[in-house]
Each structure stands twice: as structure tokens, then as C-alpha cells.
Length: 277
Image 1 (cartoon, rainbow, N blue to C red):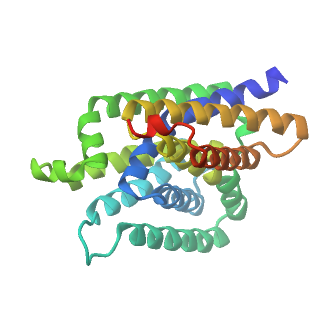
Image 2 (image 1 turned 180 degrees about the vertical axis):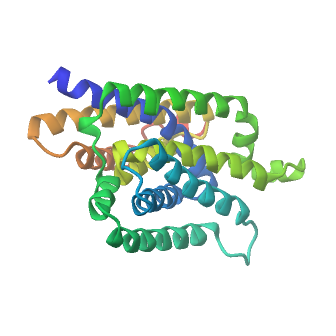
């Protein structure tokens, strides 16, 4: 069991390390479905690469996906809205998602292996992840992106959690939003082929949602998100082995159950002191 499940668990932990942190930003910004929209833009890029005759999983295919994701990042940065009477950005994100999904389906109909590519992007193949893929496609680029976010943490955290302050000091918020969404899109482009859209969305949103149930302190938010993500990953992989069920979908279900349990604990008053911090 250990030999079979160790690589998927390590991959999950690498993904949790950055996705749960980015999820805190996404929930604070109230753009919950931006992950799905950018993932779908990456999927459209992957299918477009197949139409262009590019081999699946090649470096060129990643560049296609990244290029389409960059377009989505620029669009979300330019359409940032605030104040009443304006079109909510969630509406724009939803429109991008459905249009990109429809375009991907149309392109897949004409692309070789198009239908299989769409299925792979949706479900992923975390159970078959290899150690070279973990180190070179996840850990190394994530470390670089993590350093990028650490260096610019004051800008990104202020814009996400205190946008009024960022506007007051005159920061070019759309410019910084572009860099945030571009880095976020790179993370999505790298992780979706391994984990699939469903699991990657779960890794992004659910650990952060659990953390927000119990606290608003940034340090505690990060610790709770990382801890809950690691616990759900371990339980999902272990139960997948014990019950012989697909790993990715089972991890998603375990995350859902953990969120429901956290909600019950919150209702019972567990962690009430931490929430006030």
C-alpha cells in the first residue's frame, strides 16, 4: 500500500501547500469560481493544441494551455468591479466558464482524442502520478510561485483582504490583479492535468472554507487550511485503497464530508474563541 499510495499523497500535499493558500485569497475576494473558469480556459488551450497537431502532454501543449489561461487572467483583472449598481465579477467569471466550456466541447469534436482529453482534464489521474512529475511539474514551479507570492505578499494580501486600503493608497489594483491571476493560472495549468478540474477546485476552495469557519487571523487561516487539506488527502487516498474506488473523486467526497463536519463543529461552538481572533 505504501509504495502505491505514497506518490499520490505527496502530490496532494504539494498541491495543498499552494492551493489552500490561494484559496484564502479567492474566498476573501469573493470570486469562488475563478478556479473553474481558469481551469476551463486551460482545457480550451489543451484542446486547441490538439487541433493544431501538438502532442498531448508535450511542452507545447502546456504553452497553449498557459496562453489561454493568461487571456483569462487579463480579462478578470480588467473586469474587476466594486460598488453597487455594477455587474458582479462573479457573473463575468461564470460567463467565461460557460463560453470556454462550450468552445472546448466544439473544438474537442474536431480534435483527435478530443473527448478523451476533456475527460482527463475533468477527472485527472492523481493515482498514476510519477515522482518526476511531482518534482518537475509541481514542486519546483510551485516553489518559484510560492517565492513570488511571499515577496509580494503585502500587496496581494492587502488587495484581497483590505481592498479599500489598497485603493486609498493609490495602488494600480488591476495591474496587481493581473499578476495574481496569472500566477494563479500557472498553478491551475500545472495541477489540472494531474488532479483534474474537480479535485483542484476542491483543493482550492474547501480547505480555505473550513479555515474561514473558525478564524479570521491570517496565520491561523493558513494553518487550518493546510491541516484540513492534508487530513482529507490522507483519508481519501487511504479509503480509495481500502474500498478500491477512484482516488480523485473519493478525495473530493472526503473534502465535502470534512467541510460538513466542520460546519457541525462550528454550530456546536467548537473553535468559537479562534473565530474571534
